[in-house]
Image 1 (cartoon, rainbow, N blue to C red):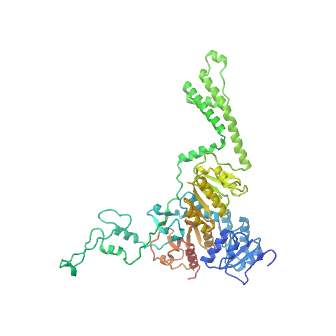
Image 2: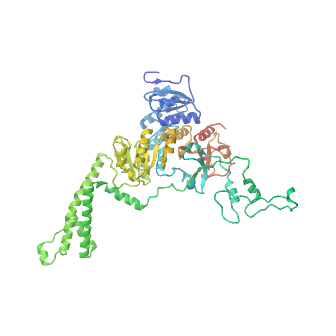
Image 3: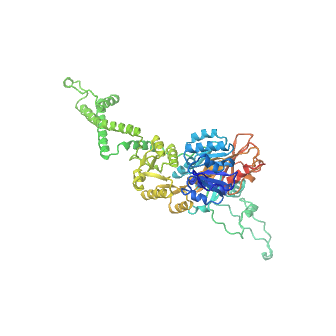
Length: 638
């Protein structure tokens, strides 16, 4: 080891391993994914083994080595045996650094699989074309939809072939659901949730309807009808009474009802709690905002230039005087067009006044009251002119200085985004595109997200003062939700508690890394949610490193379901498998299939015996461990 690098390089020669470059939260989660679910050897390259998550990464069982280098140089790549590695994940550093490292790694090992994090997705797509086997992902873009949807109190969606998959809970589940993805949901104890529980057969609901439906009425909610009590059979104690035939009513058949009766020796089942189901919509659910509310927001937003109370009073009085004078002119002349024309000239100070000769000759404009009205309009015009000039100067001046604008006094029903890092910028942009008003808060005036949101016209509250004061400036009292997205759990929790203290009804969404911390957060606060960027993004990075195409992630509270599309290629272990072979409770659920002979995507494909052939594609909803099992099958030889 040279003086440029130090640490613990692999003692023994290592090959067929995976390299993770980074010591941040995403690297930590990614290493856990690879070690626990894919069971592959991992070598980690960090810049400082005493900072960030590097100490926790060293404690993970299954990590082959942790190597420390201050920079991602050629020597650093050779120290982690880049020539014999199967995959490389670059999840820390700037876009430029990751591009340079990816191209350098391909020069050492042309066949290596490279997955690199890129904030600029367009640039990442172009770099992918330069790599033989590479993929560019954005952790913030993967996680942002979940944060935005949580703030609005609705599920996020993943687009597949023109349909939008989302998860609905309890009463929001409609009849067109694809499958149940979770049950035993207890919002106070999220550890009870069962993901992808064992589902009933495809004909189960038809059998249930046959049991429920009778000649005497519609289907009854809440359970099956109970069979009528059977008549006692003739026996020794029947005193010779004739044997009666079993009663068979028009509602149900006895055989069906006997099958539905509970086993008297079985233990009573516990109530399952809430459920969640996967549904496919024709269009993505939009935030229902009426045009009247949008117009009110626009009008109130323009009042940000008139923040002084005295100035607003003066302008309102002047406006009222102009309207009254306009009404007088209209009454005297009975010509609306001419009244508008002369009023505008008077406001601009360009009206031609009456001369004494005109008054003596009786050729004036309309008498004493008309001249009074014109004078009133002209004087009020003198008031409006400097205000309009000041507003124009302020708009042009702030634009040239690159300063973000503060939220106006009329801001209502908005979402406050705390922190304008990569994730915060993505979330603010997505909410803005959905038509939801947004106000951002940032303590660092040099944050990269400030210029991005300023270009969209989103107001930003800058400063490093206490959260209480910053939230007040962000109009917390009138907000609908607060999303805390800084990189520190304690800072996010502080912002959430201050927001709840200032507005007990506001919805709070917090970015938290620690799962135990998040569990306490759910149990303590109502109308709150927590998400982890690394927890949402790491499964997608791990699956991409193994060659799978993850289309998106769906959140079930703090749990993650992956929506992936897999292609059956020649030599793949998927050839010859059917739904029985692919699916397993708690791991994988096939939700759609596209066969090689046609390009149509079949949703909820019911044929469980049809075997896959080369060229077929399947869409699955899977847990992290379930997708890892599928990836293992995918690379197996037939």
